[in-house]
Image (cartoon, rainbow, N blue to C red):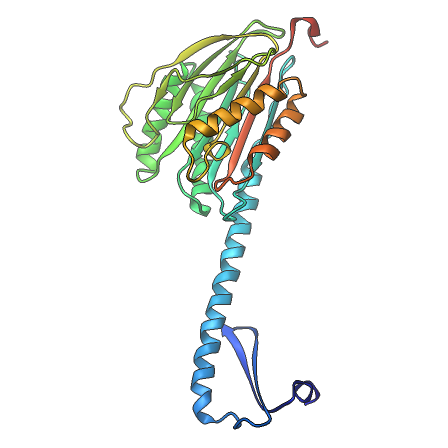
Length: 311
């Protein structure tokens, strides 16, 4: 009774906080001198109070566990990037900081068999839960299989992916940019791409000029699987940087998308002289503040002609 004596109480109730057959803690209520002791009439109120507290604690615990599993799952599903002679490819991922939610953002890059083209992929499955993260991994793997099996323009690859999404995930939508980098080691290089409702890639030249690639922009995946999806092609200047990103990097509540895109353009132009890893880190550090969504970033740096060819 010493702890209760230190509280200065004459009457004490200690009620366990139980939920799902687990004791999460205890609620201690003390009445001091000059107050009537706790009686039978108070027990019902205390019981109801502890029940409500225990449920709230249990829900918070389950929510935290689910989110932790989702974050670990999504990070484990993000792929290793290919090592391609003459190219620098790097990626970054950050879960939503403000809400501690997980989403369906993903990036991918791999070298196609036979052609040797390097794929550059960014996407976002709608939703912020474990289901979105799982669906993301499944759609990513379907895209990998279609791309490796079919030597077709990016627009046709996305159309095939859309048909698969409609058949297997009829109540899900997603955005995606699928791009192919074509060219031999050392260049010249050209980019072929198609977009399914995704923010446009940003091209930054070695001199800091910036251009958003709005061409070949189509509907989200999961809206109309029979819609035609165009492809676009563009020669890439030597030493240029290509940024593929999800909307969490540019969207802010109460702000137009144009402001976010201008902010990204300005940051990227200032950082273009930095190493591609430093540029990616600085973009994430500088733009993640105020973000309410998870963020994926995929960055490509082409070689300069005076850098020579890798041995």
